Length: 417
Image 1 (cartoon, rainbow, N blue to C red):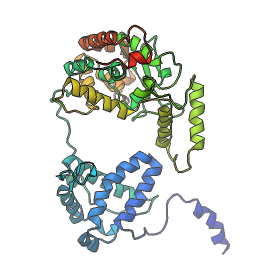
Image 2 (image 1 turned 90 degrees about the vertical axis):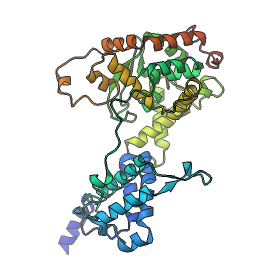
Image 3 (image 1 turned 120 degrees about the horizontal axis):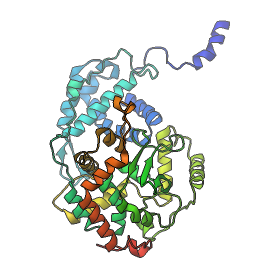
Image 4 (image 1 turned 180 degrees about the horizontal axis):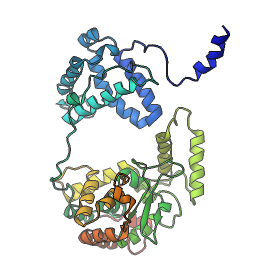
């Protein structure tokens, strides 16, 4: 009896669960996995997982499937279950945005791959000993052979947004579009990174923007890498135009705030004030709202919106407007700019290690990074010379719109093409 009492506190401290896994249906396992993903990877990842796992649940709950495999543990190594799921997905039809009046169409091969891959990930997560939802000896039936390989871009395919297309877009942009979209037209950063740039991240003397996880990682890029990019001298008046005398806050503001149609909910005048506002928002967040670092980033990005900041959707929407005016025959994603700019970096002779660096990827796997010093400004200057026609078009359009004359009022922002 005394031994049992003495062991009780140790049992409560156990990290690895003991005993056989419970008998769970497919829906129950997915529900547990989503809760785990929410805590480990954040709300957005859990939402993405949910959207991809719902079709797998639909398959698992078909009467014939449910009758044959009532518990997830019973699909251990079953290629029949996995093949049946793939067949179900390949024949599944959906409507655009879920609208009942839209014409049904088959799920794309890419989305079938995403669903199968995410389902395999969920089952692997469930068998981890610390979760004990499935036996650690459980054989995942969704093998690489069944999932298939993700379609990769043909490396010989031309860039989707070559320099002439980007130059044509510049010619139809208004002041807000030019000052905001000139960055992704020239710099190879992710949209999420550009939307998170603060005025304090811009070092005007060196013409650099610093991307780094701030405040211990509360807001960072996808790869959690610290890196810098260099912008051309043609952007000097645009930087002045964007800041408009402000000393802190987001560099890129959404149109209604930039054009003074609306005022931001809050304003800050220093980095210290910005951090205090962030701490205040964290302190007022619900306990279940901040469960991992990714959630803290979401809170910070919400703060930037309250400060009037533009987000990825704002950039993408205006990008498509400008593209439709300049080249209505093209249908590409906003994200395709990143690949087109990176291609130009390569063609301009920028070293591969610097291309990886300026795009926010890790360079740690390149052993030469341990020995060689790189000259970021020299390589970027070669790139700026290569894209001179685009930079000249941006400079000329800025003059036409009054940006280069130092106008930072709503009249300049509202100037139309």
